[in-house]
Every structure is written in C-alpha cells, then in structure tokens.
Image (tube, rainbow, N blue to C red; front, side, top):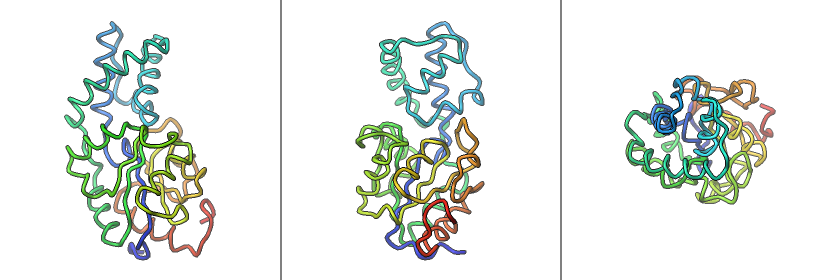
Length: 236
C-alpha cells in the first residue's frame, strides 16, 4: 500500500533509537563519566537498553551496571557534566537509521505533519537534528522540558500533536520502547514500533499495531493504520 490518505495526519517520532542511532555518542559520554569516577566503561550493547528515558535515567542505570548506586544529589552533578560533554559530541558518530530520510520525505509528500516527541531535552534534540540535516523535515520538536510530563504520560504526545495543530485520533506514534508504547496507548493514538531500537523489553512484546524492521515499511504502515475506517488502536 502506498502512503495515501495521510493529508493532515500527524506522525510523531521518538528520536533516540527510532530516527537516529545515537547510542555511540550517548554511551560514549556515559563512559567518560564512569572513567572519571574510576569505574569500568560499559560495552555499547550492554548499555543500549538504558537509552530512552532521559539522561538521568541512563546515568543511574549505567552507574548501577558498573557497580555503584547513586545518591540523587550526585546524579544531578553527573547529569550537568553529562550535558556539557554530550552537547560538544552530539553527532560525532550518531547517524540516521538507514532509510529514515527517504521515509520522512515520503510521509511529508503524502501530506502528513511530522513532529518529534522525545524524552531528550528539546535543545539537545534540535542540536542533533540540525547537525544531521533533519530539522527541516519536522514542524515541531517537543522534548522532555517542553511538555507537562514525559512519555509514557499521554500529555507529552498530546503536547506534540497540539504543537502542529493535529488530532490525536489521526496520529501515529513511531518509537522503539515501552515509553513510546505507553504514550500512544495512554493518549489513544496508533502505534508503530521499530525492531532495531533501544529497549529493555523486545518491541514485539509491547504489542504495537505494526512492527517494522526497515524505514521503507513506515509510510505504508501509517497509511494502513489511518485508513482503517476508525478501528481503535490495538485492534487492527
């Protein structure tokens, strides 16, 4: 199925692990902190599931995996150091997943409004998208600090939809993890998950409406969901 029937629809995207493979730079920054604190760095594959709930969560999980439980006050200090280093290295190795840009262009050409809905800070999100030449494809970027609450809270996704003048009933959330699935279900939006992202629970086990393995599958998946005659999310 071609990407027809998307005029005015909203496609909301998670960022890390969905649009962009950011793990090398995020975990690279985490490992800088670990080394500075005299702790062993984490292998990339071991730390990838820690991405998706914001930098504080990743720092806490990363230090626990390295053998140290953090006091909240120490987490804040480490977070501040993390942001400074990460901002300077935000796109050293991070790249869009294969086929991402073509899929975004196809969705826009079909009339969809594209928005980023991410637990990453908005400024960092915009800086990353700018560095990779992706910003022009999105009408808005709603990060953790630009919404009343973060995913999986429905208000984050609703804020993203409102920012582009959309309707939650004609919205598809595209993500990779439980936070994205929760936001979509809590808000009453459709849900597409990618199989190649960062998640502690396998994407297939999160019961998406459609699971995709490649970005060229996304435009037809969105078209299928949004032309399903009003079928409620989760019953397609």
